[in-house]
Image (tube, rainbow, N blue to C red):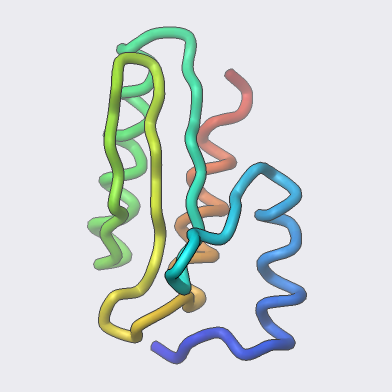
Length: 99
């Protein structure tokens, strides 16, 4: 998997950055904190996201505290952002809405 080039970053990252994803300081990675009504909702979302991640063989860095899940995405084997990160972030966002 190749790291996103400048053109791809401009096109593919823009919708994610507009949807509360941000670049992680000091890394070629994106991050977001998702907020849920309850722990049960957060855990259900994490379970669904984990199943997608496993199918994609692309695993997020994440942490859960009650109704929040903080996520960092980076393709470690490539050393930066790739299409895998874009696809997983997009799926995570889609699964989050509606609340």
